[in-house]
Image (tube, rainbow, N blue to C red; front, top):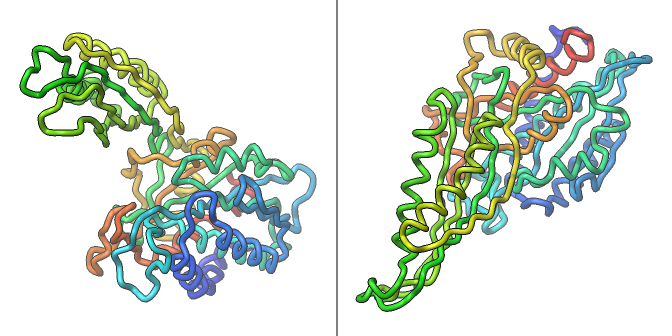
Length: 398
């Protein structure tokens, strides 16, 4: 397939992408509940005459496009798109707003599905020219950071054996028309911590007779911030956030215990290990100094998304061909997490960002917001970069 033809081929599917995205936006489904979404994906892939496997990772779908020029030793690349929504009540009033109470595509996964289906259509129309295989992985439960591992366990990367992976996230903090791609980490690891601070409850007016876990918890929250500011290099992004505190029953009662819940984000494996070791140590020492105790439970989540340098260079060139070098940025590292990391850990790959914000149109709400929306001009851009990158890889450019 001539590289010059890709832009026109993708543009021909722009209306279809918008319609698909809006349909999915109106009918969001939460993690591992994506039955309608999966059925639509499977039907569309079958209509393109792809090999389709359903129930991969419970509600995931895999479509395999075997190129007509795929001889012995041909390459295989995976294009991954996540499909689940969030438990958010949408506040927007657009014609395509969510019809499901308490559920919303507040992170752009509806756009990811529309983009990947368009890429499948563009490549399927020209399969006779393709010198390799493309595996399309439509992944459930990214918001619970568990769908990727389940898809891999169910054989999503086998038959044909995947050798490289690419994927994108539409991103409102970048303006539409911009692509963010860089070698190395782009998204952070994401781990949960639960700290249970125990004291001895009693009357709020007689603190000397009790051990106050609220005071201990307050000092633990403050102390944990010094781990990032004093024990992690200022050149390494890291976050320790306590997002929830539960304790106490009345204004004049000292509680027996307080539970803290938080998250840890890093881009570096050594930093991640250091923080996950030091958090329970420091919390226990602070609590002990106040006669309380603290037990920590860690829910180890996902590693950072790290793009292979060669694959990132391939995607960068595809992005420059799509939007121009002046609209491609490497200043796009984020502290959010994504279980795309498990695919990237399995084979060399690249995860990149496609700008979807548009302040002139009021499209500025962050991801996971009830006001989240995208400039749908991002859809053909994402599809074109993916198509260009996949074809370049199969042609042996990377």
